[in-house]
Image (cartoon, rainbow, N blue to C red; front, side, top):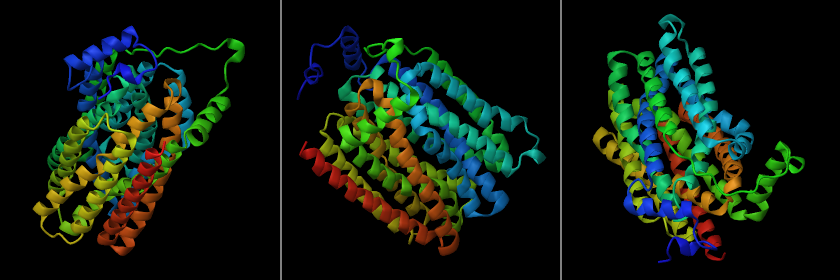
Length: 429
C-alpha cells in the first residue's frame, strides 16, 4: 500500500508531517483538531435529532396534512439551492472558523432560544416555518464550510474516514435524538423540546473556538488581479463541468440519491403513523433504528478510505440496492419490531453515499476551490431533494404511504445504476 507521502508530488510539509503523526497517535479521531470538531458535532447532532422530530410532529399534529408537513423539508432545502454557489465562493474566500462559529450561534438562537421565548398561543405553524427557513440558511453555510475544512485537519488518504466519522455524529444524533424527542413531546410538548437545541449549538461553537485551522499554502493575488464574485463562480462551474467531468456525474448521482432520501426523512413520521399506527415515542425509537444503521456503515467506511474511486462507487451501488430492497419490504411489514430491523438495514444502505461523495470531491478539487465545488454539488443535490419531497408528499397524500415508499425504493435502485456507471468511468481514468 502506498504511504501517505507517496501520494504527493514532493516531500510532505512540516504541517503534513505533524498531521500524519497525529493520525498514528489517534487512529480513531485522526487528529487533535478533528477530534474537537467531532466532539462538538456529536453534541449538536443529538440536539438536531431531538428538534427534527419535534418540528415534523408539531406541524403534522396541528395540520394533519402530510403535504404541509413536508414543507419543513422543503424550507430546509431552499437555501442550498438558491444560495449554494454564492455560499461556496464565500467559503473559499473567508476564514472557515469564523463561518462555522457564527453559523452555530445563529442556529442556537433560531431553533433554540427564540422558540422558548414565544408564547404558546403565538407559536403557530407559520412562525415555525419562518424560523426553519432562517435556520436552514445558517445550516447551508455551516455544512460546506465544515466539509471544505476537512483538508485542514487530516491527510488526503483519510478524507473518506473523516467524513464517515462526522456522519457517525449524525448517526448518533438520529439514534438518541428522536427517542429523547419522542419522550419529551409526550411529556412536555413540541415547543419545549426545541429549546434543547440552543445549548447544543453553543457547546459546538465552544469546541470550534479551540480548534487550530491549518491554512493551505496558496498564492495571494495582487489587488489589481483580484477576481470578482462572478469570475469565481464561473471558475468553479468550469472546473466541475469541464475540467473534472466526473464531478458532474457524481452530482447527477447525488441528485437521484437526495431525491429519494430527502423525501424519506421528511415524511417518515407520516409513514410510521399511517402504516403502523405509532405514536411519537414509538416513531422516535423507529427513527433511532435508522441511525443505528447509519452508524454501522460510518464505522465500516473507516476501512475503505484508501480504496480507489471505482471501488468506492461499487460500494455505493451495493448499499443502494440493499436500502431499496429494505424499503420494498417495509411496505408489507405490519410488525413494528420487524419494521425497526428494516429501518436499520435502510440506514446501512443509505449511509455510504455522502462520506464517499464528499471524499471524492475533497480529493479531486484544489484546496482553494473545494467550497465552490461543494456549493454547486449542493445546489444540484438539493434541487433534486425539493422535487423529491414535493413529489412524494403529493404521492403519499393521494396514493398512500405504501406507494410513496415503493417510489423511493425505485429511486435508490436508479442511484445504484448511476454509481455503476461512475465506477466504470473511474476505472478508465
